[in-house]
Image 1 (cartoon, helix red, strand yellow):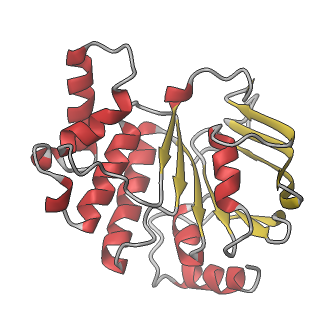
Image 2 (cartoon, one colour):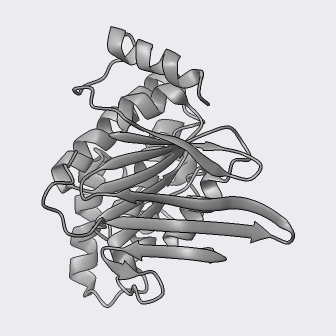
Image 3 (cartoon, rainbow, N blue to C red):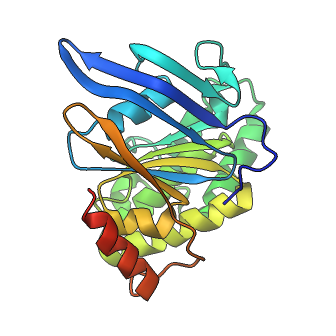
Amino acid sequence: MSAQAGVLAPTIGLEKVSKRFGTQTVLQEISFSVWPGEIVALLGASGCGKSTLLNIISGLLPADSGTITLQGESIARFSQWRRLGYLFQEDRLLPWRSVRQNVGFALENSTLPRAERRTRIDDALALVGMESVGNKWPHQLSGGMRSRIALARSLVSEPEILLMDEPFSKLDPQTRSAMHAELLRICQLKNMTVVMVTHDVEEAVILADRIVILQPAPGRISQIVDMPLPRPRLPTGRDVAENVRLLRMEV
């Protein structure tokens, strides 16, 4: 969604990032950059280290070697973690909290005044079209509604970077398509930079500006593919179908 021209530093930069668990190397010398407003998909088969890489970018896991920068700062010195949102594969809604309380959970350790927190919760719910369900409980929501509430929770801190770990993988095709459109709308509105993990080739083609293809044992980049197709990208579109076909031969 954003060109590299004129940008001095990427929003996210990785240079020769490697990770081991015990004696097993799970990621080997991963290098790529993500530019402001861009959506980058990490695509590959299970076991290639996609989620591990996302957790390293988020600061949840340390890398064993290599360099990581966030908004031009070393990850070791980066302090603006509220600029970063994380949308997990599971919605992780707390059943004993209302929808509003679940969305507000991301603000509980902030120094924002209570009135500002309420405003942000209202704004986040409105952004995903869920302002009418704030007082409901998670068990009263459909799968698609729960996904929207999880997205609202990740947006309530107004992040500039959004990390996503297959958050739509358990939705039915119709709901997933609706969430794709919702994500693209919000990204354009907020000019967010997104890195998303997926094993779904069609999802990567529909959403991403660039696709980083990982291969396993150890996880490494096989290629990075630009996806300059105009939006909206429909699964039935000829160009989308052709790119899906070509990418499936590479994954």
